[in-house]
Image (cartoon, rainbow, N blue to C red; front, side, top):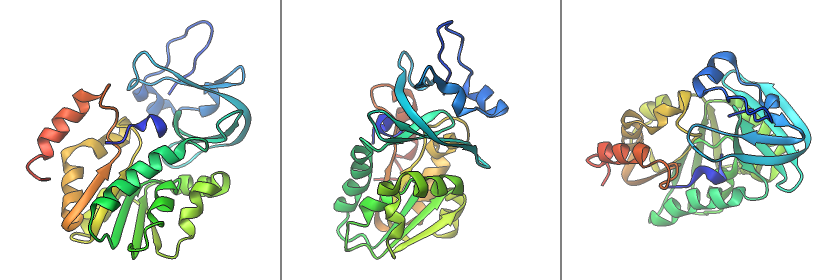
Length: 249
């Protein structure tokens, strides 16, 4: 499992106001700009109790709302450009490699000859970049539900989005589970580069999604997913591992 702290909702202020819940954010439409206070972006989330993540903002590069989520990109003072989705830091240019390399190279090197690889999510392109380093891979499919993330990453995260330039890459903008159900026995490796299990992304951490992945694998195929933090999220991880233990050996 990959610790998502390298891959990463809430306003902080001196009067210690209570941050909105994730449910409230989904209903009202979180505004990422509200999380920039006194020149600093602040992230606090229900999945990280007792913790906060703050980065100093040099310049806001883009802020908009796609059909699915709030998208914010800012240039930080020390971590390069930063991509934030629904108030949650996804990547910074300074340390994104630590996440991308682990989630891509481990399953690809564990498979004897991975020819077809599927990436669910990963719209920033970083996982594609790492997969493309493997000459044995003949086809790479990325299925990302939010085309806005792809567009934004190509514009502001070029060192990651360069993965899209590889001729072996096919991009599908749509639902990952639906795509896998329509493409069974198709892939040697499936990598799920998802956001945290809050709101719509929570289904990516449930048994039906893992069954869809299993059906989309070829014989001997390998799945690698963003699996949260083993130090904080055992209550999420343990029941999932138990539920899928009979499906995956």
